[in-house]
Length: 273
Image (cartoon, rainbow, N blue to C red):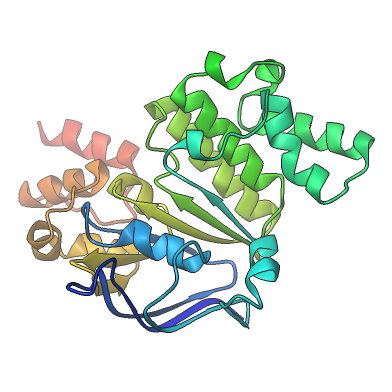
């Protein structure tokens, strides 16, 4: 089943220049897709179009078989959750607990079940000790954790992460990415779309869609992309550390490939001294 289908999508903020040009792609149910590219390439615009925050110029968007239009917008937003880059845009509760519980209250979840779910998901994102805190007492990274809990507690069919880990430190980012992987294991049908400039993060996904100046220039697996150093350099992408390490090892004549673990590479480097 296709979770997302986009065909011949165009969008412009003014009449003079298209921000997105003839965008077409599909995402399967349960697939984890990263949409990457430099600032201004159209990533966040595409994200907003997928949840109906912006209205397309022309083309079509389908979410779980539903055409994205005003008639279906409410139904689509019940199955899609999004985490934005700036958590202040999403924090609406007086406390962490109120904020995480907000969507459950709208869905008339019984109070006891709501309390249990809030504790469960606040614990998953490392915010169980902050439930009574007001947003003014939280760091940007802590607010982002709350925003992620807000999205996950709805148990969506499609989760969109719009630079969702950009305000977290490396440890926090690692914890959240591990949480996302765990959510996939618990629900193999969960579809994840990650809008990111962090190529290390994109490396964890099933597929990468590369945007450049509003157009899709590449759609492939991370391993396929990182085999093509010329493409990486052409679009000024950062090379993940382990990919760069393997490349350097090959230049030294060591027998390594994408399946060689970092521990094995370390041993080979020691032996080559």
